[in-house]
Amino acid sequence: MTATASDRVLSAEMVRAAGRATRFGLVGLAPAQPLDPAPLTDWLRAGHAADMDWMHRRQEERLDPGRVLAGARTVVALAIPYRRPATERSRVASYARGRDYHYAHRDRMRALRQQLLLLDPTLETYACVDTGVAMEKVWAERAGLGFIGKNGLLITPEFGSWVTLSVMFLDRAVDRYDAPHARLCGDCTKCLGACPTGAFAAPGVVDARRCVAYQSIENRGSVPEPIRKGFVARVFGCDVCQDVCPFNRDDIPVGDRRFEPRPLAALTPAQMAGLTGEEFGRLAAGMAVVRTQYDGLRRNALLSIGAARDRSARAIVERLVHDDSAVVSEAAAWALGQIDRPRTGG
Image (cartoon, rainbow, N blue to C red):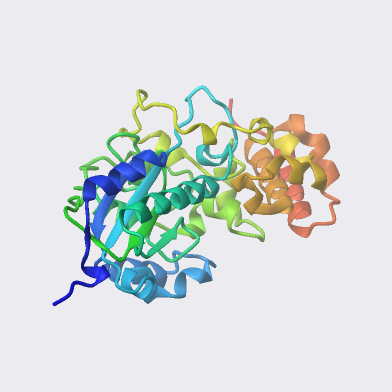
């Protein structure tokens, strides 16, 4: 019987070498078998996705690579490290201070596909970096890159949790797959206790409704008042559960140069709140921060000012109480109330 193209087996080492050659920090391989649906369906059923309605769609495709790429045989899990120096001060989460990581992954996955086509010109692929239907963290764990910790993030031996992820499905098997990584958090619960808003419904289970990262990026409306305290020293995203993780050692090297901070990341909340639309467009271009949009960033900055009760920012807060954006004016009124609230204690 004549072998078909899908029967061809690729060299695992050559696939890994192609990933390294295209500047991925970590490369792992897992068989493209369907995932257990229970964690996703339970998380959605509990309402932990907040208003991210897109997570409810295409669930069968999220769980089975074969429904995305016909004949899928292998999942290539890919990571790019992004750790920033501990001395670097910013109100923006570490991953978002420089160029948007989606661009880095897409550029490198295009180069990786070209490398793999040199191994087999008839190869078919599907690539995804968290805007598609692939479950990147789960596949990274299955491919041995690391393990999903109690903070819900992938933790790698080499780079801790300071990694961004992507995956590529192949319609070819490889001659050796990586073993799934064991979960190594043990009895440690530092991340669970450190979360400023109590966003962990259980170890490894994040309730987006209580998460500063979700509220500061995905939520376009008013942030619930109980969550606003979590905006102290934060305007876009949150790194608290990573900062306290013992796996995020001080000797982990600084990450990829694409994540070096841009000028926006160095602004204070008052400076961010005072940006014009033109300034925001210029400074946020090419950064993940653009996702929160102009009014969202100003809202977040005002919540950060209010949570910190920063009286030095009173002038910009008073001005924005009258802003045309309802979400901005409401945040400014709240921030002003926090600034004016009598201080208690010694």
